[in-house]
Amino acid sequence: MGKLYAIGEALIDFIPHTKGVKLKEVKDFEVQVGGAPANVSATVAKLGGQSALISQLGEDSFGDLIVDTLSNIGVDTSHISRIKHANTALAFVSLTSDGERDFSFYRNPSADMLLSEKAIQLDIQRDDILHFSSVALVPSPMKEAHEYCIDQFTKAGATIVFDPNLRFPLWPNLDALKETVQAFCKKAHILKISDEELEFITGIKDEKLAIQSLLNGVTEAVIYTKGKHGAEVHFKDGFESSEGFTVHVEDTTGAGDSFIGAINYQLLQHEDKLAALRTHATAMLRFANAVGAITTTKKGAIQSLPSIDDVNEILEL
Image 1 (cartoon, rainbow, N blue to C red):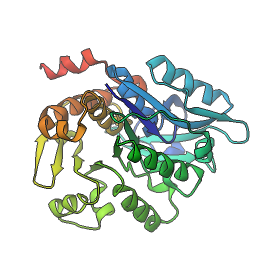
Image 2: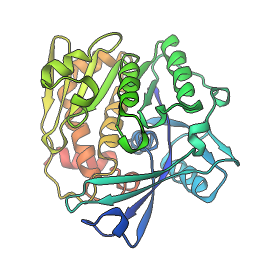
Image 3: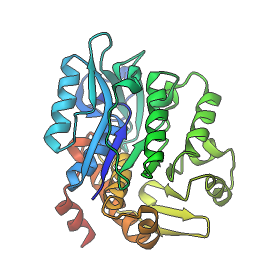
Image 4: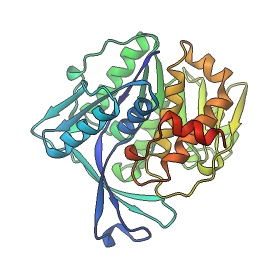
């Protein structure tokens, strides 16, 4: 089995105890470890796979909490650097009554944004996966670290997975966000795009045409997620789909991250990952839908992640 390397931000999410109020009206918060790459690596580890996080944290208590939390769940934290001159990133979140979120980020710049490629030492194998999202692709040393890792994984013949996971408040210029995401889409073998992101990224209103427009360059599969309505995986010559699961939603934080983490976990069990995705598409989507659904039933992301037994239980219902 290969190993997942997720590169990007790890941060502290401040989740409100009260739903249905604006962020400025929230009185108290619960501290949760978060950040999409951290959530993805934690999902793989919780399910029983091998994963590592490539990131950078401040030498502060929040950084200590992140390292301890990830280590305890089984994530390899040896590729996380620590620095004194910048703090660990923070994100304050407000929740609507149905669990949807609004963010306010404190990272200008945070320690993760200052990660240099010089701090990254990897022993990449062909059956490994590199996973990343767009939060850490704002102009910074971290963006250059992404480009370095993508180049190294490509040379090793490993698989690259990109989940844009758009966070508009982090980008003062949305045209720059769009151009950056489009450029990095072409570097990934597998893309994960949500129904809320598709038109913005492609500029195409027609769903089928928009998805097909992403299947160029090295990209061979687009995983298209539709929240509670399930997910699809599209290839140039067709697609497969799986319906979602109905659960009581407490908090959607980490649902998409745990979904793609579950896809990565399954892909790691195969040498030829794209062939495996083609062969087992429906089963992989159903498994990932179950993981994502379970994650929404509690607050936060990492502490809500299911074990393999939890997933098998819902799959048998």
